[in-house]
Length: 392
Ligand code: RFL
Ligand code: PHB
Image 1 (cartoon, rainbow, N blue to C red):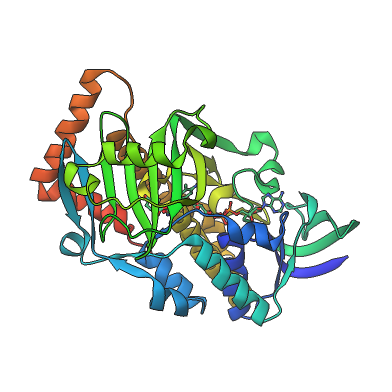
Image 2 (image 1 turned 90 degrees about the horizontal axis):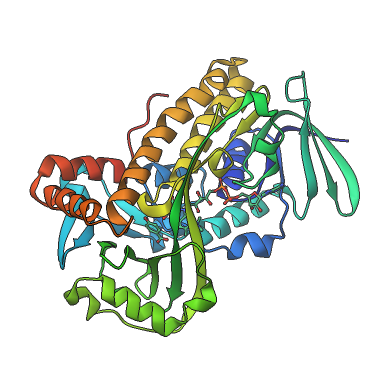
């Protein structure tokens, strides 16, 4: 049997960031991951970081490349009805956001873990968490073809929406809140210059479109699509035509086409599990909540959970106090529900919801109101850059 202070299930951004922050505070952990490292590092996902997430990555000592290569954005564009309205993040909140891909964060974290010989059990199967109400928790799995048990003080369930951690909790101790949206995002990555220096979120009667980027020479574009579409039904030529059709003419004329280097369809979902703590087991990131990507909150919420949890664990080992551990769930959920609300609102505002003209007219009226009202734009900006953290 292995022994560690904190067993971390999942080597995604939540798991690796938590292990790195704990390490820097002298706390040992073992990360247990179902996939191989190449698989985890190849996933193309988030691209937009709140400054709170940037600060946390710097606090973990993994921010050097991000600070050199990331793109700082002071605003973004809302396009609708052939027009556009810029949300001036800096002018409205005094803050900005950072464009830096999750793939790069994953690499930076993996390099930092490797540099300090951080222990990750890759390709561990059949993970089960047991005895999380007892004096020690146990994580059992099959590793390298053999059964393995790890005894620990705490388990951090950082294993995403489909992971084993939430599944280990008895059904009568957890409440699940869910909304499934009847559409998805077809996304492509291409080595072409982005259509604009800032992100463009476009509302259109054909459906939503998003122009994002990973760098000045790599674009990330999305279009709303029906849930039963397949990637094969979206050859590159169709994608570029559809993207242009959904943008105001000025931006459509600036789209540079190129071969896609990645294509995928993501369904949209809102999901929150409550509470986020069960004895010695703590759910973190996508294991506890999912937001539709419209508000770019998923990775940022995961970072916010990690921030609250690592500080609570550090306080436990330094001062023997369980106060912050006891507060983990309520602190994390306060932020989660506000981001869930914003992501749901922004999704509902920007997507084609039905062919009903009443709904469409209300969306246009609200977008027009945002254009005219500084107060309304400020509320969007405040949520987009990330709400303030409550102390500590
Ligand atoms: P992850 O990244 O899903 O990592 C979980 C890890 O756990 C492993 N695992 C297991 N390991 C052991 N045993 C098991 N039984 C296991 N089951 C699973 C998995 O293999 C994996 O390695 O969760 P984490 O770390 O909480 O991170 C969450 C973020 O990845 C996610 O919230 C974001 O990607 C969401 N997201 C965005 N977030 C943003 O903040 N800004 C964005 O711009 C943004 N854009 C996006 C997004 C997500 C998207 N998709 C694909 C859903 C854009 C898209 C299209
Ligand atoms: C992305 O670049 O993948 C991205 C950016 C902003 C979003 C969603 C996704 O709101």
